[in-house]
Structures are given as structure tokens and as C-alpha cells.
Amino acid sequence: MQIQPEAGGAARTGVRRSTRLAVSLPIRVYATDYKGTDFVEDSTTVVVNYYGARIRLNHRLLPEQEIRIRSLKTSQEAVFRVVGRVGSLDDRFAYWGVECLTPSPEVWGISFPPLGPEDQRSVRALLRCPICRAQEVIHLDEPLLESIQELGGLLRGCVKCGQTGIWEPVPYS
Ligand SMILES: [Zn+2]
Image 1 (cartoon, rainbow, N blue to C red):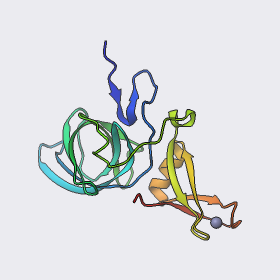
Image 2 (cartoon, protein in one colour):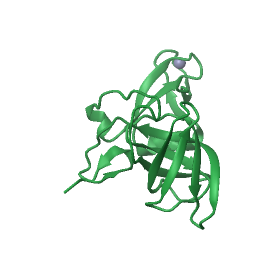
Image 3 (cartoon, protein in one colour):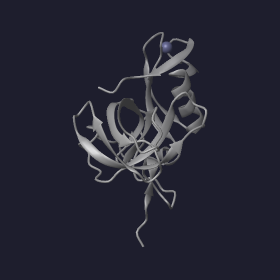
Image 4 (tube, helix red, strand yellow):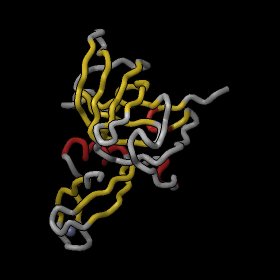
């Protein structure tokens, strides 16, 4: 029996196969919405891994449908299967888990760090102190990830400058 993977690269066994990174990459989505209307929407990823992504989208999709995503950073396109909607239902934006039908390192243009023990249940983010610009890789669980999505950053204290502020994700270059 083949194990079908879920969004985020987790097989149904619950074991993740790839590091998840909280990275906002520009994308263009070509798809059909739940009413059957074709659309093109420019948006961003919220989390990416080798096998897929969590994306932000205003249009509503249907689980199991196939959509085409173009990375505006690498100009690579690939077909993804919609796994489902993730996060709370009354968000300003909806988030969707998608899985690539033909995973390859070229799609996102990112080399994923090796999977560590914390990566099984958390997402890695590179955040920056708003005051002294110190950078730190932080492991985020789901509630912290949601607060980053909603606030645009994470309220935390800095050991370097001693100040508390909203740490923002460092744009992926
Ligand atoms: Zn600081």
C-alpha cells in the first residue's frame, strides 16, 4: 500500500518528510474556484516545504482539485493538488494546503535544511528584531504561526538589545 502524503509533507503516518519553512514567496495561482469559474490570483506562500506549501488565497477552492502555481521568484510552474483549507474559518484571508504532483527543488528555488527532531511538529522561521535587527531562526508551533499570519510578526523580547517588539519574518532572498 502506498502512503498518501498530506499538506506539509506529512504522510498519513504523521511523520514529516521535509523541513517546513515560514517563507513568503510571491506566486501566481491559475485555478477554477468552487463555483467553476476560472481565475488567476497573485498571492504568496505562507509556509513551504519540499513537497508543497500553505498558500494564502482570496478565491475558494475545493479539496482534491488540481491547480497550477507559478513561482514569481523562480518563474517555475507546477501542478498542485489541493489538500484542504487550513486555519480558522473567519480569517481575512483563507489558507490552503497544497501538494505538488511533481516535487522538485526547482519549484521554490530553496534548498531545504535537513529535518531535525523539532521539525516534526514545528515550522522554522527566520525572524528579525525590529530594534537592533538581530536575526534568529525560531521554531513556530501552529498558534505562533497563526499569530505571525495575523499580526505580520511575533511579539517577543530580544536577548541582544533587551527590548520587546514585533519580530518580522526576514524576506527570503
Ligand atoms: Zn534586539
